Image (cartoon, rainbow, N blue to C red; front, top):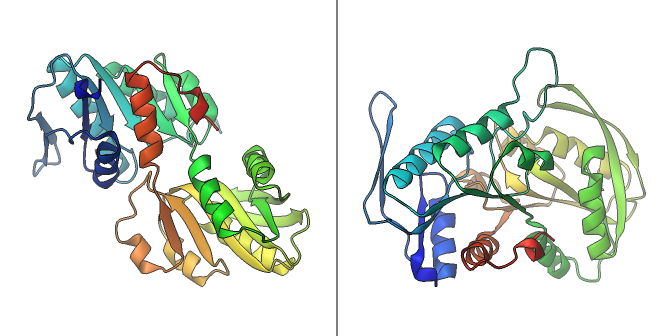
Length: 314
């Protein structure tokens, strides 16, 4: 039945898209993506997609606006080429942190992006670890918000088998996520009380929980400038943690992130390939990348064959 599937990608997730295709045993679809000298994007689908179920793999990561426009333009091209259905597989959903009015006269950009994607002609969205789960409600089409937890948990179980570990959330908002990991790893939980003093600026206040002489694993959904992460690591070290590791689904790693990671007491950071790191992982020996390709490929297979996807939400 998979012969009706066509998988396409723009410039943001070429390696991940190829892994997904390998897992599904289907070829990567042909698309010519060009950028003119004035910055305009031109996309040409180079194969027949009439009546096909099309999946577009595209993270809206940096350069965020270019990748978002590629997704919208490719969707329009596929729609006009008479594709039967178009599913946008967005491993990392950009603008997700602008999900509410945090102050007067500010936009809710996550909702705007959802409207753009829907208007372009997308029939369904598949994403991984949305920064805010309520963003699913911004769409009037089905949204499958998968979790990278199974991929990360398998690695942690193998890596720290028999060790005394503690899961640490760097802010109160991630407590539920860290508690779920702690339950599956049969370990304790600690919370860092953090207060922000400005955008991308965080100040660690104090630690709730016991980390002394334990291996502390900091868990977050994304690592951006790594300010929160490295301050959390320092707080853990000051409270007697024996070793400090970190894991997150999305490695945004913008601005001074790499420098901060290199200067930190963190021994290893586990990320997934929802965002391509490019040369960033070569600038530090502390990053290990796990792939979510099999997870996304299984979701695509189940959607195409009208099977339940809910068992993947673990």
